[in-house]
Image (tube, rainbow, N blue to C red):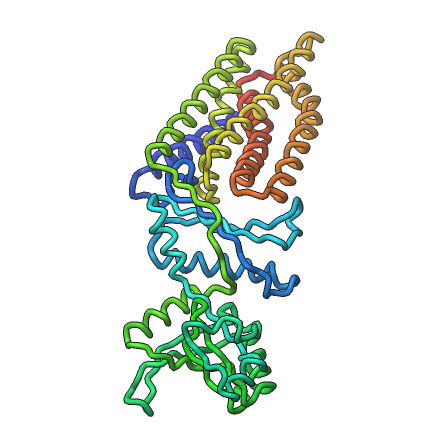
Length: 430
């Protein structure tokens, strides 16, 4: 019995320390505050559609990941607190490449126009070859390259900002130190750039930023090493701006805004208050039922339920989990799972007591008989949560599934470890 009492004291002491951690880290300046989703904190929700028509189907997934990383770097540059950028693929199983979307959530940013501007400022860098037909017309004097209207004259090469490794500002000593932009491609871009220049000597290679032609040099020879320059009509400040934008956000493909939504801070605060109230009411009702129905065992179950709640809150902070209204609903639902395990144990224990066994032996047998039911029911819930998380098409569903999964796992610990240890510690072996 001394062993159970020792571990019961340890469990309660750890729970108290963790509870203090949860409380203390909710200060305004704490880095461990609960991470709230857009529906609870307020902000802007944007949905972009990516144009993947010029990307091979096998490269779409990696291109979308590159797009997500690029947008995230770009937004972080403006100091937005903990943005959430996620890729949403078409189709039930995420295998439909006909429509690729990017979900952008900006907590605290309630000005939609400002949010759109921050993402829209990101330039798209493309290298295109002048078509043979346009080249023939230019040579015949029937057409000229117009930087403001060159649509249809150039052909895609596949070389884009996705393959850019670094951009830098340089100064052309041959033209009074005029600022130019140096580009260095990654390995994939270097090979493609060398191939383009090798196979198209004498042709015009157009360099486009945001669809605008900024330079159209002739390819005089193969360029290896993956380095190029843009020698448009740049001022020093303009060149610095372009270099910064390219380094922190050259998009691998065009994107178009298809949906916007703004969540006000007041609405977010109300959702938080309602969620907290729902959680407290649920805990109070469940605790009252357990104490009235199971008396002493019910009190121990409530204590285990408090430990369960504290452990969940600590995990939410440490992982960290982005809490949405749906996620909190999943947490409240998992409270029922935690209670369910205790009820199974107590009912099995009551059956053993009716057989004439003492409380210690009845508890021991009750836990043993209840374990298989607890294991099977929780295993099915875990499988459901994993499937829901893996195939979820929206962050809201993923959040619900993740919180519910954590809750189920912790409930198994609280029921089998915390409840069992405390009950044995307070029971006498006869």
